[in-house]
Structure formats: C-alpha cells, structure tokens
Image 1 (spheres, rainbow, N blue to C red):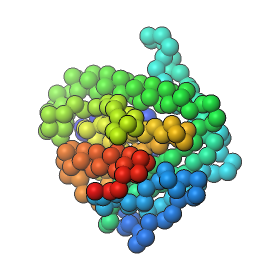
Image 2 (cartoon, helix red, strand yellow; image 1 turned 180 degrees about the horizontal axis):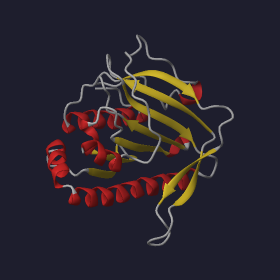
Image 3 (cartoon, rainbow, N blue to C red; image 1 turned 90 degrees about the horizontal axis):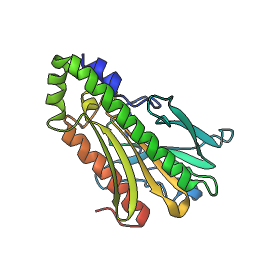
Length: 238
C-alpha cells in the first residue's frame, strides 16, 4: 500500500538510479568555468564523487510542466534555457548517491524568466501532488495511518521558498517517501544571479543509507542547502 501512495507522491521528473558507491579518496575538480559553483565537500562529510560536463550536442533548453493558464485547462510546457552546465554527484562515505546536482547557466537575458518558470513548475508539482495524496489517503485510511507514523507530525509534502545568507532557494520535500529506499524525496533550486546560474538538486534516499527517519533526512537536507550556499558566498565550512 505504501508503495502505491509513494507513486502518487513521487515527483513527475527524471527518476534517478541510486547506486551504492563509496566516496572517492579525493574529490574531483570541476571545470574552470564552474570551479566556484561546485563545492567539493561539506562539513557533515558529504563529498563530490563524480562530475561530468553537459553533452556538447544537448539542446540549449529543457522543458518543464507548469500549471494550466486557466482552471481545468491543460498543463503547459515551458522551456528553460541552458547554454552550459555540469552534473555533480555527491555521496556520504560508504553510502549511495545522496545528491544529483545540475549546475546550469541560462542564456543571456533569460535568467529571470528561467527562474520564474522553475519556481512555478515546482509550485505546480506541490499543488498537484498534494491534491492527489489527499484524495488517495481519504479513500485508504489504512495507508494514511502508516504514513502518519512515518512523517511524524509533518505534512506529507512541504514547499519552502526562502533565503539563506541573501541567496534565494526553493525546495519541495515529500516526507512520506523517506521510507522508500529508492525514492527521491527532495527537489530544490538555488538561484545564483551573479553568474546567471541555477543549481537544481535531487536529494535521494539510498538503499545503503544513514537515514532512518524524516528528521535525519531533513537534517542532511538542511546541511546541503546551507553548505552549498556557504560555498557560493565564500563562507568556510564550520
């Protein structure tokens, strides 16, 4: 039953494999153009274990779903520009990938529009997922009882738009997915206007994992957000 509701709550985005692999002895270096945009390690032990450039023949955009223009209308497709980027994978020692991170530079003059589209898209996922979860759980009280024990007083889905050290970010967290070993409970965006860059991270629950509860996962999520922004603004890890 929990698997069924997890499918309803799962973000309709790229499903990522959660392969178990140890952290590298020495974190790899980012390309020069992204050196100041990709941290190599975090204060809590999370480390960069793999980095790869965006393919040379990839389209200069990606498509995302946003809310219908009118109630009851069709979901709209919007394009987010990308002129350059890297994918950075992070893991804790002895565990699988925790963060799949896309660091993408917008086309000239497109950054603000790209930012607005991505915020709207994440808000759409939150609103749509919340409606489906509420409807399903109302019809399946036995599943709701199990999920309520997992989320431990939190909402099944939480949307956050905030700033840390003056840097804006948005995050969507699906607390009900923490019990699913192959799930991707969080998607977040960190906005870096000085470089026309948007950082998109998918935080994952691993089969070989250090997270047993929602609170444990959320502590590592907070460490990732704040640690990444500390790096961007030049604050040394604590």
